Length: 264
Image (tube, rainbow, N blue to C red; front, top):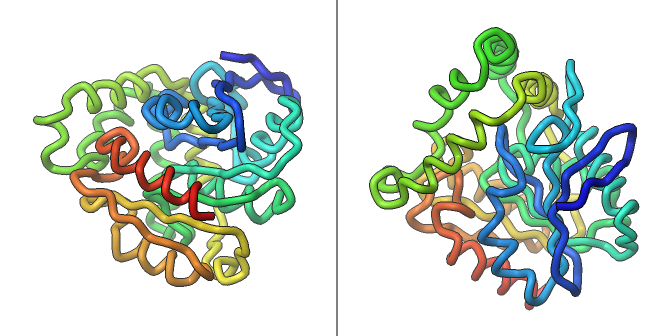
């Protein structure tokens, strides 16, 4: 991986392949490796760029709070440092989807296409904000094992644990290896993320919405509503998958991405 210095931080970035660039923003509290199947599947035709977002993987941990706008600005700075001067396809899952919305709003000149996977456009409810802030305190006191215990049961389709135990274990290991201060900072940032629903009709780039059939965190019905509010957006349902669709059914996700890239 490349180590990229930008915005007073250092970012670990997977950068390989040639062609039209695609940026992949991972979910919470994971790292770039959740996209391994997509990087392997698309690097033959595109330049694929997958950073560890601020606070995760091997990138700089910034204590306190890191907003989704901060992470979007980080991605823009990484692209500039890498010398990427053409608009990118930005792909984000869950928290990475929140980053994707902010990238689209804050850096429109850098955006060619948008892909939001298993994510939401609304802000947290007051109860959701309280839950995030409590988790931030818990992880600082007790470490990331508490996060794994709370999150893992919600992340996958009912059959994934039995049929793809290696996927569940890979996600567990990503969570356990996350830095508690980075996890807490991202939780605080997500807790104050804005509702972008009102911005959706103004999005003018080709947009693909992906959702696992069994996603309990970003339900299919909610993601269908998101797609309906974005002009020309396409929704693709990923079978045999929950919230971690790119890992649970990488073939279907890669097929959807290739079709979208070819058609837009």
